Amino acid sequence: MSTTQMMKGILDGCLLAIIKDREVYGYELAEQLERYGFDSLSEGTIYPLLMRMQKEELVTSTRKKSTAGPKRKYYSLTAKGEEELENFIKRWDYLRANVNRVLKHEAASDE
Image 1: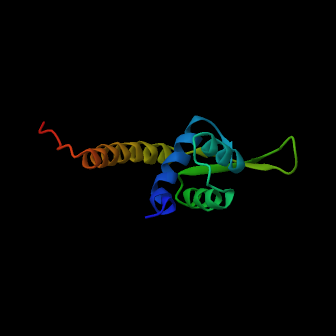
Image 2: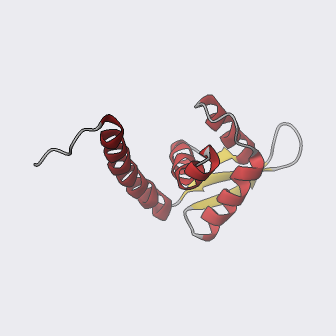
């Protein structure tokens, strides 16, 4: 399985987490992801996700003046987006814990 296939669902949550902190434009999101170690992602990967998230009302966008060039589209989280991010974090924690147990051959504790 390729990294790209594994990243499909994870990238949405990562984008929501970055946008949660402040308004961000698309290229800036790509730069942020690269800073976190996702160096193989292009803007061509990010923009379709942002468009879908906007259609799903997880994010909103506003065009603002740029100091260099044309206006930029800034994205911010909606209440629905914040809820989706919380759900993503819960799902991620669950999956991460279980995958790590499998990889380390550790049984789940009975609580």
